[in-house]
Image (tube, rainbow, N blue to C red; front, side, top):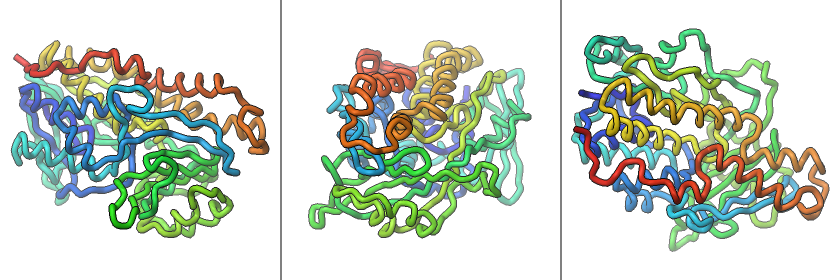
Length: 422
């Protein structure tokens, strides 16, 4: 009855924790030999936070994260467009957190090892494919030095990211991820938090955008916090760009000149870029929604299933929710193909919609519409757009992504407390 999980990222570890919680034997295989806290900042919506709390990780999450208080949008000239409260301040029963991705990853890893033992995660083994069998499924693996092996289990879950080998076998004709020409530069800088001290802000419009939020609490002596920031710039989509190398260290001077025109009195955009440590560049890539994730006793989750542009603050959260929905399906239908079918029927349509919306109508697209209407030449947003239109745009995305306030608060627990398979 063992569930074989290909990939030890946020998705795979969340599924491992869920399997342990409900009494399902599992094994996680991760390609890298040693897990390290990589990446920069991400956000976790209340829908995902409640799942982590239901996994007993509330104290750990509070230690590594910042409770996001509000989310504001501004033009490149500094004109205020829209601010809405987040998490508890918006009326959710759970907070929203801004966290360092690497700290979240290691939090999940250490929790899983502590609860399930050191053998729960086997590193140094990358998934290369699978085979359905009469008894379930076989996961094929390869080490960095070329050694191969196969493991038999009841199910294989592909949590092996945007370049998933499991997905590649399910859809062998898909090709590489899709890049539309936007490059992100990401970094963190020690600085004083802005606005409420727990604010997330987005400044500019498509092609010249700056996003920032704190991912640590201020140091009591210096008042400085780790401020996460992301810039986006449009490039020629036909340019000779290494689209596969999406976590490469970059030169901050490649992006700094473009943002030197940002002059706001409450945030020093050029200064945050200039004073950052390492800066990374990412082509903004995604994949088209699939017609199906499941093949017999095999399915996908996280970025392997629904890689989307990183807008809307729901990438890591959707992977966590995938894990919990799989766990709920195991409880209701056992460890077999029926559970995978039920899981996909709920999650694939929703994540497909979000993937497509993130390309053209994510929550940030309101800034593009403002730019189109007025080219930033106004002093009050009411000259360009009504509060009702702004609110409707924000609510439409939340509804599509599955984290409307009333909907989230009214939804029962994904996994009942104490529930066990069998």
